[in-house]
Length: 266
Image 1 (tube, rainbow, N blue to C red):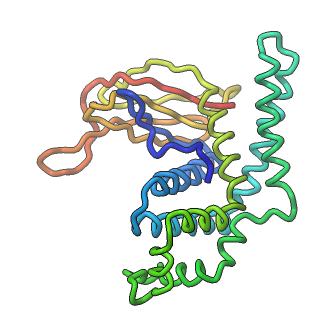
Image 2 (image 1 turned 60 degrees about the horizontal axis):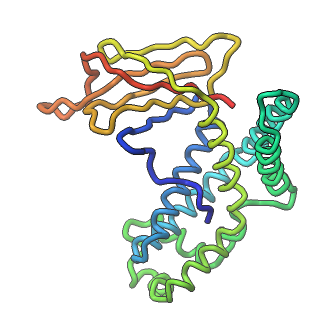
């Protein structure tokens, strides 16, 4: 698996909340989330960790099979490549960094747009994985008496299990790498703006000549509030919520909340 995705967005004393502004970014964030789960559990060696890794690889496979996300990744790689091409004559651009960024994108494009590349084929066509997938649809279906082959595999050496997982998921690596590159470029594209949500509410209209792919909001990690973000192409709304201690229901806070806003577009 790739070494790119972190499990959560908590950094130092801040928590980052994100909201995709279109379906393409929504799909990328879902992939990133699933790869993060895999990366986390591969650091551990418990039976439940390996079962979670297999189950999550199945989720990634289903996501790729049921959606057009592969083509959306190709489109976004091409779009970002075009953006980089427009910057090549700018005096303020570091040519070495620009060339490196273009090479990273072109490398992933060469893999993913190859007509022979069908991500998740290796994993989904494995007999053991097919059996595991069927049992996953049954509550507690992975008990050792229901699936002795899984029980046998879980008792193999850590080295063998991780090597087999690498082999089974090898054709998913280009998707993983492309997801990281695309989201990393988008996240780094904006400058932070300090904003205030009066009575816990903030609304922003996006100008017609501008665009936004991803909303990011940073607040202090000890804040009792969290942002509930909703948005479409040209506007978004943020409501800061808290949990009512009496009813356990979420309610919009009546206080004024300072936060850091990023409207990201590459």
